[in-house]
Length: 210
Image (cartoon, rainbow, N blue to C red; front, side, top):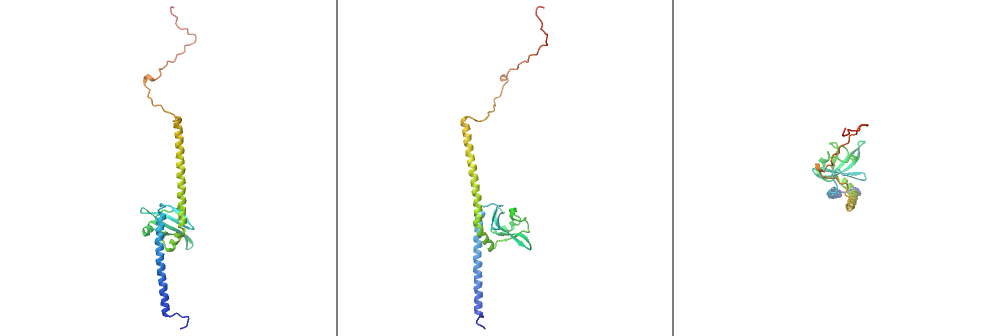
């Protein structure tokens, strides 16, 4: 046995060390996965079925699962010379996985519903991608709500303007054209006037006493 060779005891110790590290990594990754699912549920509370977000080549689809909304990440990958979508279910479990086969997703970053969809529960790598991009997804949702707030502010301002205009018109007595609803009786109708019949030329009429 040379000096560089490993003894059976050292080899056994090395294998034991690797197994311990692998178990520790798997435990940590499962914990990260559970936390990523909680984050996905937090994000989906701000979305509705059919919503779509996109950050750094990965899209996020919100879809309905028996009345609840779940999330899946969409990856466009090359498979045997052609590009196909792969979906990683971020929350909702097996029920979401089944529902995703027939779910209608944003047509700009998805394929047609059906059994041909490549769907699986999210792996640790998928969860890591989601966590890395989550600040960007939240920023997109925030901008959308800010835009909706501006729209409601604009509508509220238009309502106030309309109220002021109506109040001004009411103060001037300009209430618009009035339509009379008074019923006319026969006595109130104007008397009919006879139209005089013109006499022929040269006719002098009948003189009395002749």
